[in-house]
Image (cartoon, rainbow, N blue to C red; front, side, top):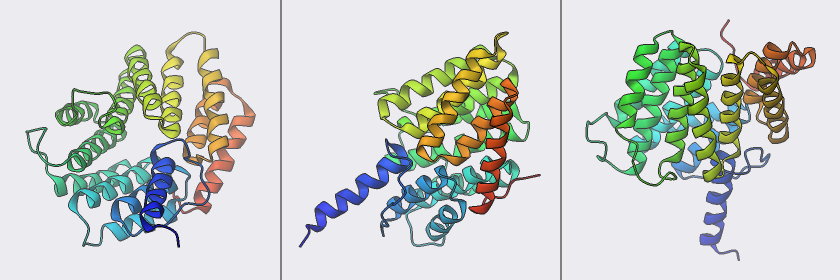
Length: 278
């Protein structure tokens, strides 16, 4: 009879690998009764563009009986799924719920690591929501608040929160027209993702690196990196990122093939439960 402890470790390892590691495209993911692992499953499903499946898992975590930190992470993930499809103002409501659950104490060391991670996710999400609503100054202020909860020690500590903060800083810099700053933030996000071994986070970081290159007179490097990102998204089944990469590549190169890929991704996203904001 299989050792339950070994089976438990294998489930945790598989879900961690899919959500935050080297296997984001795993087609068969194990189920779990542990709330934090159900959240990881939802994250992995969302990364693949399985919106309906991901929302179903997250809904189970927001109905009560789950630790506040995990519920907060679930609300933040719901917001992320909405934001991907253009619903920034709606996402802000979910991120607000996420922050309300774990508070925003001024002492960055207050609470467990999971609580601090949840706070960072909520604040970073709110900053991204503000960006999408054209409130850039608010976005920067929210990221500054998030910084109070990010440790100043080892680069791998709370690595995911560091990466997400750099992503939004890069996006805000792009909105400000500061392509050099955007490149620095995207490069840092890519480096942290490499150390953490997260394929999905590295791919998104490279997508932002490509976007930061569009400020150059020669768009060739931006187009080549966008094409490379598109290929890697295809290899790992990361449909939302593939859609974004195709849109970027089409914009910088006028590639009709990329435009066709974008349309294919949109159709697949809709089939999997995603609804784009008009």
